Amino acid sequence: MKAPSVVRAVLDFDVAEYVSTTRAVGRHHLDPELRNRMAELYLDLRDALHEPDAVFDRQELRVLRFAELALQSEWKLADPSGGADCAGLLNTVSGPRGKRYQPYANVRLLNQVLGTRRGSSDASIEYRCRQTLRFLVRSWLEYEQRSSNGTETTWGWQRPLTPDAMSERLDRLARLRQDTADWPSLPRPHPVPPARWHHYVGDAGRSDTLEYLVNLPQTQHHDENAFLRVIHLTEVTTSGILARTLGAKTWLEAGRLREAAMCLERAAALASLQLDVMRVLRRTMSVENFLGFRKETGDASAVQMTSSQALHVHLLGVHPLKVEALERVPENAFLLFHLNDRFRPLRSLLHELPRDCDDSAQVLAAARELDETLYAWRRLHLGLAHRYLPKDSMGSGGTSGAPYLAGFYQDRLFHAGELTPHPVPVIAPALEGRPVWARAIFSPMN
Ligand code: HEM
Image 1 (tube, helix red, strand yellow):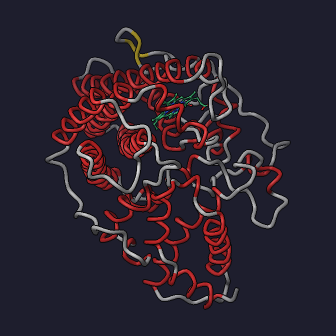
Image 2 (cartoon, protein in one colour):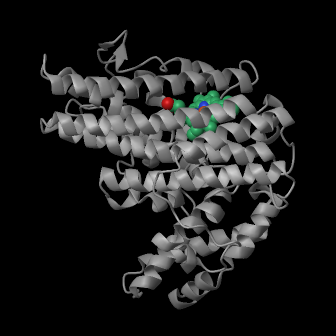
């Protein structure tokens, strides 16, 4: 297609129909014709945007770049190999599509809302994270309330919760709502999904993006909706924690200890919310409900979650037992480039703090709090792997599952109150002989 007709086709695309169809049947059962049309539109748009002599006005370009993110998700999900065979796909015209977690959770759209793609400051990312968390908690609570009083009619009606589980979920969500009540807010979304992309773009479109485009479960199972909401809340808290951890590292390198302590305190507060969010799932989702939708999520696994992997690399360095898992995921392989002598995770910087000084003590106290909370999350998460997965089964991300998680969940900044030494150093794998996607330093898919 020529660029002007591509632009027309993208701008005329009926977003409302896409959202309501997806919600009505579950994304896994989306009409293949619609998904393929979106996948083709993505490829045409990608080419049109890269044409050297293409001219777009500023607003049009913003809309097209936004639409590209949503269309790309469907292109990735249309991948017949399920993202499993990236090297093989290099031979096709469309190139490697990456793993399924990113499109499943619509992470690129979420990052657009958070502003993490624009080199924003840690303070601004945290501000947007708090806005988004408040919005998502309210949206989830209202969904559960509608489900509980029988007014939710459009989605997530299969395998409902038992009355006890529902009551506990509502209580826990109401507490989260209370905890976030004073945080900055976003406006209410439109009552129905807007039909054109331009409504979703920019600051004004953030609520509609979160309400309609980010949360698209694969099935109609009630608890998949909850599962996906926990994934989004975890993505958002992790982005905030990561931004503040990077901020703390920069202040420590500059010798500004009080500012570093403040960053770590704020990171710890977000980590605490993240733990409470995971508890909602652990306390209220039955094993049967989880297994009811697991198959449809395919090999989407949060082991592919770039923000979480990056956070742990910046806190602790690359753990030897994670090298293979990082290497296998094209979105995350670039993190292996932190395996060099010059990279200093927070762990190293804490070891270099001046001794017997109040400001150092404040940094260490905040780091301890963050470490403790993240460790509690990892313990809880390992418990999920034991409880919900059939014994001896592999993880959906292709690792050994619970044994993989057990291998490093105890790697922490502190042990019995004392800073821990570095884990066994590892040498970067020889990337030379590996497929091109595994060598992508800047991970173009992020
Ligand atoms: C019943 C629910 C869950 C189970 C049974 C489960 C299980 C697993 C397993 C087995 C892995 C290892 C990787 C693989 O898939 O092969 C993993 C990794 C991971 N999961 Fe979950 N998970 C659950 C829910 C969640 C949720 C809601 C989140 C939130 C985002 C999450 C975040 C992660 C992260 C970040 C990793 C990567 C760990 C690392 O490599 O450091 N998980 N999970």
